[in-house]
Length: 81
Image (tube, rainbow, N blue to C red):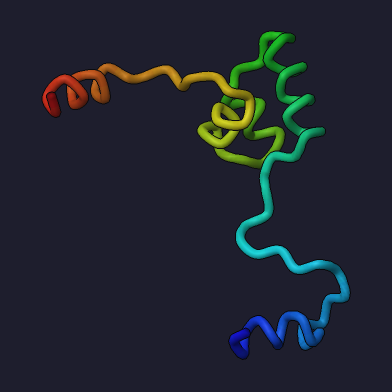
């Protein structure tokens, strides 16, 4: 066991909770549900992302919708082939 792992298990960290590393997930399940309701009401994905304080691409990823591609990205995708 390396020093870092011993430090984590010995409780050197100020938090008594289980340690979790990395960025916290955003949006959470409640926010995803809210975004789906907003989209069903006709609000755009960008407006819903603004309400939830996250990026629109994060919201696309969270609810499993493919983001619409712009004409520029279509042209660059064709040129890469």
